[in-house]
Amino acid sequence: MTDKNRSVFILGGARSGKSRFAEELAGKSGGSLHYLATGRAWDDEMRDRIVHHQARRGGEWTTHEAPVDIAAVLDQLGAPENVVLIDCLTLWLTNLMMENADIEAAFAALETAIASARAKLILVSNEVGLGIVPENRMAREFRDHAGRLHQRIAAIAAEVYFVAAGLPLKMKG
Image 1 (tube, one colour):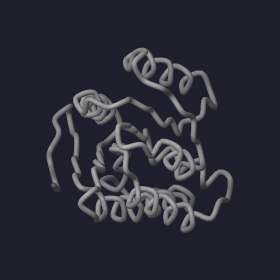
Image 2 (tube, rainbow, N blue to C red):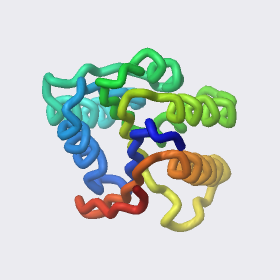
Image 3 (tube, rainbow, N blue to C red):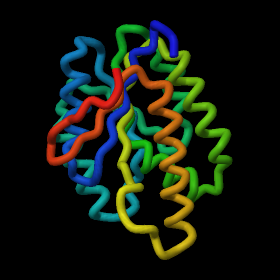
Image 4 (cartoon, rainbow, N blue to C red):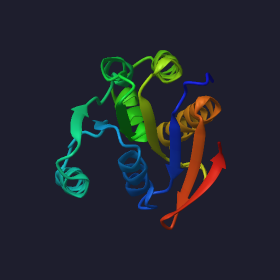
């Protein structure tokens, strides 16, 4: 981690308040707000979630859709006055797995982008490793990939938070 690293990593369970907390942090930063969306609207329920998130953020955000190549978009948004909220890494991982992408290469590219970023980055992800062991192989692989990704991002982030019941717990920084 370099002195210029201003990245914040926020973990939490489903409906824990992590996205709202991330948006509040970004808003307090005073920079130009950019939302890097990784979700894909595969069904009506996901479309409704996306609409809800967009309405909550309001018009002061510029949205960039990056379901797979986060690192390339981060390179484009690298200006120091930018605040980039990436929501969320577990949806990104799902997209990588569905496309049979090289997950290690994607993780490494994201790490490089974070380490070299001049913009303030806020990364959001679902903590999925606190429950029971999933019964099927794909779900176990997803959980394992997510756990490894979270460790790697937490190691390079300047700050790390865990959010539960809308309450952020600062873990690092």
